[in-house]
Length: 526
Image (cartoon, rainbow, N blue to C red; front, side):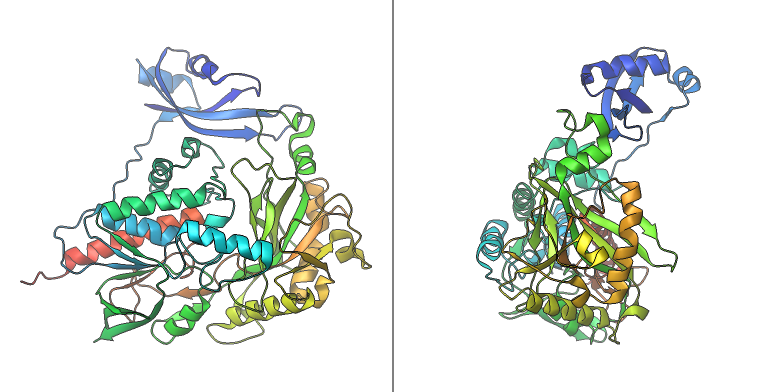
């Protein structure tokens, strides 16, 4: 097969024309064709169109390759999870059933190892009821919420599958998600997403496959301790029982603060850079016009997104993250007396507003608290301030961009805050530290020059956004194990080794592979 890039198609043209376009570029007959990637090219606002990457078959590959500079031999992307040389009687344990834990467990189950998964939250359907109760009534379940439960934090966000990570495992991950019920276009869309309305069902589908392969998923089962002997793991302790195990993949997610506190006494951890800020909301129609120009609203185009970043003269970095077209700002608290936010979009991305995290990059030297968990302490402080400033009940503090930049009372205009269970107009300068508010204020005009209307006076800022990534990193060896606890594999976002659904899933697969390799390297006993 030939990998053919930069195949254009106008917005009103049918994909049946792709074969003709490929033949024009290669100047030869195409005998087979598969879409590898589809993206929107909006660099020139007067010529917004689609651009495709295709894998094609031709009779004379050498001649076709010589004729077209956009053609190259198609890479062989095959990935298959490894299988151990022997199956031990003892089952491996996976802690956490977010993307990292889910794909680690799937790989282990496919290898015949019948993993036991411990998840502190509930299954997707039960968890959805708790998430909805927080949004509608302001009632939090601290064990099953937008952070904890089947699918992890990403299950109740946009389900964005874009990543900057380049890895041969990514196509395989997308294929498994599609097989579990996700839209098939995630396997070739340049910016794939599933949607918060569909992703919980997809997660449940992967869980059913793990169980069918001999795995076990225990919900409402938190890890509360580890048993060790001679520097080696011997058991996973829950409130109900101790599960004997010598291999455990620790995929707890970035909000398992109580588990961090328990683990920092057992395995080496270090504070790590992360980011905090707010969510910014605009009308989706304004975002579409800024990105697509006269083509905004075209039926072939979905809602527009964006990704912005800048470095200010003082060296501070600001960027947008987790942009949710046609979505809403949602409550992401996991502890009482604290409020924090996230973004979510349904699969159709058909809500009135767009939103994104607007973040300031922070380093350990910025933390006002010392120690390994200094970043966690800072998160908690800002979340408590926000809770109190907004009046409790998990209401969130909001401010317009105009008020943040020039002072005065927030005057809400066309953009209505979407956060539930409710908002309170506040001065974010009284909640967030100057290192954050000064950076946001400096970056907003810069971003407005890049994306017209970004710093509009009536754009809404809802805060705080504190959970963009983990503030700690659990150290691990080249074999991906804890240097202090043999058989313990720190994994994914919570361990500080991933940032997003896809990178977490990939890290889960890597840890499963390392666990299997460790099984094969141990002496066999009778």
